[in-house]
Image (cartoon, rainbow, N blue to C red; front, top):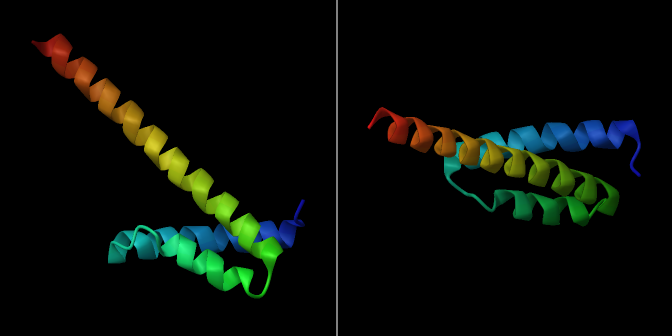
Amino acid sequence: MADSVIIEMANKLAEECLAVQTETGEDRLFMELGDVLGTSSQTLEEAFLTAIRTRMANDKGRTFLANKLKAHRSKAAE
C-alpha cells in the first residue's frame, strides 16, 4: 500500500486530469498520464490509476442513478 503522500499526490492528479479531460474532450487522457507517471514511479502510476478509475466509476454510477430516477418520475407523471 502506498503511503499517504503518494495517495494525496495521486488524488490531486486525478482531479486535475478529470478537469482537463472534461475541458478537452480527451476521454483517455488518464491513460496517457498513467504512462508518463509509470516511466518514473510505478507506485504513483498505480495510485493515480486507482484514484481516477474510482472517480470515473462514481461519476458513471451517479449518472446511472440520475437517469433511473428521471425515467421513473417521467413514467409516474404520465
